[in-house]
Amino acid sequence: MHAILDDCLLILRNQYKNRIEIRKQYTKVPYKFKGNEGKLHQAFLNILANADQAIKDKGVITIHTDIRNNVFQITISDTGQGIANDIIKQIFDPFFTTKDPGKGTGLGLSIAYDIIQEHNGLIKFESTVGEGTKVVIFLPL
Image 1 (cartoon, helix red, strand yellow):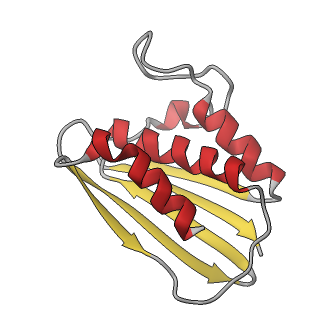
Image 2 (cartoon, rainbow, N blue to C red):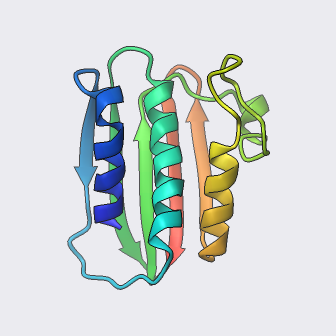
Image 3 (spheres, rainbow, N blue to C red):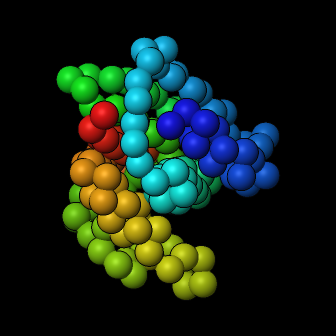
């Protein structure tokens, strides 16, 4: 999982360099996870790209991993603009986007949600407008 997350950060590096500080807090507990690496890469890349795009100027993205009750937990939080409560329920809907026309298809989080579901996982969002967003992904080991 950590290698997948690091690869996603490498892919996005040109978009966030000199603007966003990346803080990684990875668990040291050994674990085994069986899943589709390519699909998980796509899910994490979509979530991290959204975190990057939510930060207009300078900010921080924190990635924290932990293992609790045989579940691998990935928390990705950003200090971006946040998501209003009245639309947070729609963020997994296909083609829903808050971006300007031509800036996004509204499929990234829908695809990420489906991939996490395929791995018998769960994804939750918490957000406060003006403060940022926290995405928590739970994947059974």
